[in-house]
Length: 130
Image (cartoon, rainbow, N blue to C red):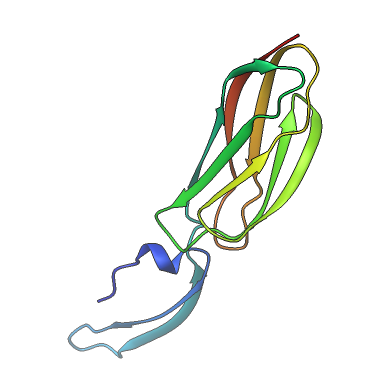
């Protein structure tokens, strides 16, 4: 008996099944399946959430998983405009945002996932004053 664990996410699982019945020939089957990808959660926080145009805020992005440690890339977007792409080297990463135009902005951190983890996204709303 084997119980699939989080670290098995996205990996092949090989198993054998033997069937026995009195008066019958034993049946033996070997099969392989792939364990589903583990889910992830991405959070994006920006400090401060309201700032002046000449300032640059700091964004903190955290990607967590119940499976293996997340790896891959994160894209940071302002609406549809890509601001930066980062390689995820650990669970949490920070960056200084570029100077943004005056107004309200919806920022997104999009984790692309990998062969063992599904992607996810986090959002933050900020306001840039003059």
